Image (cartoon, rainbow, N blue to C red):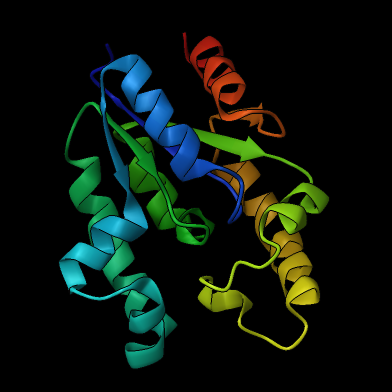
Length: 168
């Protein structure tokens, strides 16, 4: 349906992967989860990359990957939670499509991430406090990167519909 990309941004747990997959199916586009793309490229999980090489290395690979994907068409891309915090990544993605922020309250995210131990940036003693601080820091950056903001505190299919309405 679309020859440009749709890039989903938002905090971890906002539904980028779930909504992205549904959205791609509905629009007849291909879905790419940026973290999964990086994992395939590097041959290890994001957690392992962080552990082995640190966050700066991961961000470098993320930036290269953003450029590669922005060079393609017809993709729904679920950006990593930290991807669009970097203005250069936002500018790169904007050249190839629309950036859509999946916006939802930190309380909803906290509920969704309960018991999730796969997030390297939350592997801290006070996970809830770390998450809230990161959310406060990142949200304004997501908002300035986004072309469109949708309320994502709903079922994934409803969020999909909101994105389609906002884009068309």
